[in-house]
Image 1: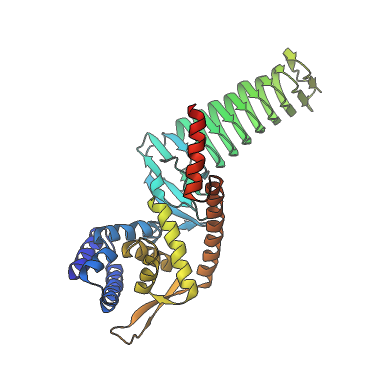
Image 2 (image 1 turned 135 degrees about the vertical axis):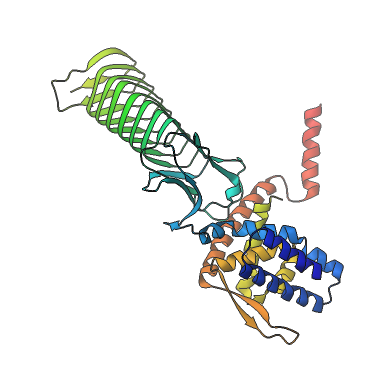
Amino acid sequence: MKTFLDDLKKELKRLNFSKDEIKEILADHEEMIETAQKEGLSDDELTTKFGDPAKLAQDLKDNLADTVTVEKGGTIVEGYTLWKTFPVVDKEFDISIALVSEDVKYVISDAESIEVHYKNIDDTDDYEVTFDSELFSLKRLSDKTRFRLSRDAGKFMVKVPQNIKSKLFSIKIVSGDAKLESIETETFDIKTTSGDVKIHKFTTNAANFSTVSGDLKVENGILGSLKMSMVSGDASLTDTKIDGPIDLNTVSGDLKVEQTEAKSLDFKTVSGDCKGKDFYPETVKLRSVSGDVKIENSDKSREIQVLLKKALSGKVKIK
Amino acid sequence: MNAQFKRGIIELCVLSELVQEDMYGYMIINNISQHLDVNENTIYPILRRLTKEGYFTTYLQESNVGAPRKYYRITKQGFRYYLELRDSWDQFIGGVYEILNKGGKKHEDILRRFEKRTETTKL
């Protein structure tokens, strides 16, 4: 078993374990092997019991992966562990986030680098995060759902420097929630199934938001145009300025709009309503089964023209 | 078996061993490998990680044979973690068995049902 210990030492060194750690791990194994021998195990039995030192070293490394990053100067923020850091030189790059059940927060920091933090993630090998100066990407690699022993949802936090500009900002999630802030992008794509998405402060030429049952909350946006599609999820727009049209499709989800301006509102709905307060689209089109459009504004001088109303029982009311 | 899945189960087993009493490394490995086909290189990394995470503390104790041994003792935090894992495991395995038992409990039953069903679909 002398070779086992020698091999283990070699493997641990190769994987950059610290001297102290190697010493401790070897001492533990010396003790365990000695005990096993005293209990009368033969060398062959010992080999099967202790297995391959290379695999052991790798397992130790994998098992410690989360704590190791912390020791290497990583910081823990609100229970998050720093996973990866990418220095940013040119602030123009695209952003793509594709996750399944994980929550994600996208926030601005004072640092000049991108930081990816995680929390309650079983195995970071299930994810891939890359940055190559043109694209930052965070994604889940496999769709395998695995038996989770801890019940808290996995979370990611992406911290980026100020004033990042992108051609495309795309986020796709299934059941996780997303919280995004301070985004400047030409095209802004959001796709969620049941996860809720909150966006605060953003500028974009074209926004395409889609949800099945998740809710969308949009605040402080300056948009060229907005295309939104919902099944049963609700959406809200607050303090938002849309230079072009709002094109909205919903089945039963409601739309709530406050302090918002737009060129036009094209609302297609089955039973979902649109409720506006200080909502100033220049024109409104409604195609509806039973869904209504109700707008109540304080500035009566601004006229809203109803261009089209095709509805079974749906109404347009503008006050 | 999926490595991550297995790791989670072994973790629960290690915790469960130490809930009973303080033990030295080889004893834990030996106890678990009597029931499950796992070896040292699966258990030791888990033992080490859970210690680092504060779920176990260690102390040295003389043994009547040879050098002193490193004993592992579960902490309060470790005990809470054990209860949490145990709960989700019970829930999970309970669910799995409910599904499996719908098909029958004994092999003969399952086979009989299967044969009966395939016979009628043949016709």
